[in-house]
Length: 142
Image (cartoon, rainbow, N blue to C red):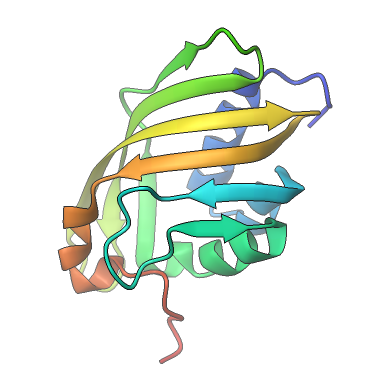
């Protein structure tokens, strides 16, 4: 993506890559020193990932666990900082292991600089991880 890409356009592009299950391209949208945070992470789940490599390792097996179909209800809010957006959305699909439906609401605070994500604070629902098939923090090759 060009460095003059708006945060809104970069975010929409990132969602398309997740739907396409193109995790390497999604990770490529990150700054080398980007930080991903999960303020509501339950015990045993990462609270903070520092750097593109850590984010890549975390997301590597995501499509093996969650088959995303859509991001309905997407709302992107601008802030007074032109590089920062607040995102409200749902991710829907199915859990690969069980075939059960997946429907998660998200709120994210996202910062972009020079056309790359530098900060992503993901406020997802930690109660959803009670479903064993959602734990994509562990490798699918057990």
